[in-house]
Length: 295
Image 1 (cartoon, rainbow, N blue to C red):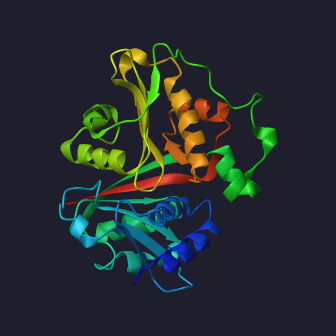
Image 2 (image 1 turned 90 degrees about the vertical axis):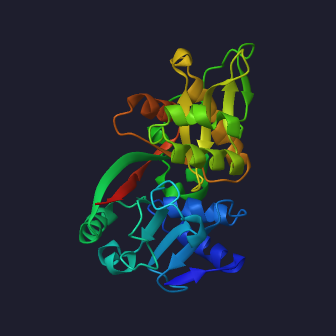
């Protein structure tokens, strides 16, 4: 396994991963932001170079000091040969199978190998599979072959206006992490709050402040550059605030040149309808997460 170091190698990796879109998206998004300053201090490992078959992106060893912190102990994986990557993923220098960890990928085809590998390592695995979306502008730029304007709804893809006398567009600071953590589906604990604080400190955030000056709706980005952790406090739900923020965030990130993408639960019809109306494109591959817990 080779650790790619230096801007030239990482830029070559980003360029190569772009050819594997959309299935390489989770790793592509991560490497893109590694090339934008690498705020989460991640590393990229490949089986060989430059003609790699499998790439794994994860934190540096000194970052993964808490064996129970699966928010930090997270691995993004892309393989051109999912059927034959099990030996590589089982290597201790690639994945630390002594820790509580997460594996994320846009490749559902990795599931059988990860499940089998986890069983041999005496791990319990909880797989989450969601729909994966990309903004119209990002698809147009990165994967134009997926663009079919005939399937877009009528209209300009813009949200309804909000009451700007009551609500003010702003950004989050670390003091708001507890509020985000309270509502986030994957959060609600001390380690998730630390992860959220780190995301707020290192990536653009978007929120709407209510009359009291506190956030009532928000959206963040995670270490892979994905739009995540969106939420609205209960008393402000049903007003289209998440739709407004999703549009605003997508426009702002596009101007920065970032790839814009996100996932949603397969049963979340509200976000799926919102995505359709905003002209986001559902990708042919899924968002996958394997939550691996040592037995």
